[in-house]
Length: 348
Ligand code: KG4
Ligand code: ZN
Image (cartoon, rainbow, N blue to C red):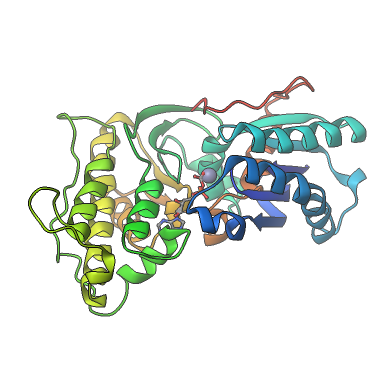
C-alpha cells in the first residue's frame, strides 16, 4: 500500500511516499529556518503563509521522487494534531483535497505518535511486530513524554514535561550561549568539541517527586542562564560575550550531560511500568542528539532491550513518519472522513 503523507504542523513543509508503512519511497522536507531566524523562533503567521506557498511543489516533488503518479497513491495521511493551527490547516486542507479528488481514503495522524513510528522506517514487518510491549520516549521541540507502547497503534502516556520540552531547553540554552538558530544541533556540536568538560558545571538534574515520571527542564535552563549572565542580586550582570570559548564549551557539555541524565533517570523509573518490555523506542528532534542517542543505547543494553532510534533524517519533523503510521492505521480499518479538522493538542 502506497501512502502519501503530509506534514505541516510547525515550520517544516513535508511530503513523503511510504510503502507498506515501513519502506520510504521518497521524503521531501522544505525547512522555513531562514524565514524565522531573525525572530529567534517560529512566527505562526509567517509559518502558515510559507506552508501555503510550499505545499503543492513539495507534494509534487515527493510523488516524482517516488517514481509514481498520483493515481498510484492508495491513501493520504496527514499530521492533523498537535501543532500551530494555521500551519496544520494548510496540510489538512491539501490532504483533504487530494484524497477527495483521487477518491482515496484520508487518515489523520497524531504527530507525537508518528515520532515513535519514525524509529521503524526502514525496519521489517517482523521487527515491528516483535517490538512490543515497549517503552516509548518522545523528545522534541514541543513534547517530552514517555509511553507504555502496546502495539504500533496503541500507547498509554506514563509522564510528560511539566514545563519546557527538552528541545525547547536546548534551543533556549543555545540562544543564551549566542549560538546560531536553531540552537539544538549547534549546541550538540559545541558540546562535542575537543576539550569540552561535561563536569565543568554541576547543573541540576530534575527528579520531581519520588517515583514521578514527569520531566522538568526550566530549572536547568535557569541555572545555565545564571552561569552565563550571573545570579541576579549577587553577581555583576554580564553577557555571553564575556565567556571564553572554553567556558562556552564546558557549559554546553555540562548542560547536555544534565539534560540527558534527566531523561535517563526517568526512563529508569518508567521501565517498571512496562511489564515484559522488549524495546526502547525513541523519536522526536532531540533523538538526533549525540549524547541522548548514546544514553539510549546504554539504557537499552543495560535492560536487555532492543533499541529503536530513527535514522537521522527521520528524527526531526518529516512526512514519512506520518505516512508510515497512517498506513498501519488504515490497515486496521481506520480512516478519517473529509470532516477532519486540525487540533492544536496531542491525543497521546
Ligand atoms: O521533532 P522536531 O523536529 O519538532 C517538534 O515536533 O517539536 O524537534 C525539533 C527540536 C528543536 O528543539 C531542535 O533544536 C531539536 O529538536 N534538535 C536537537 C538536535 N537536533 C534537533 N536538539 C539537540 N541536539 C540535536 N542534535
Ligand atoms: Zn515533531
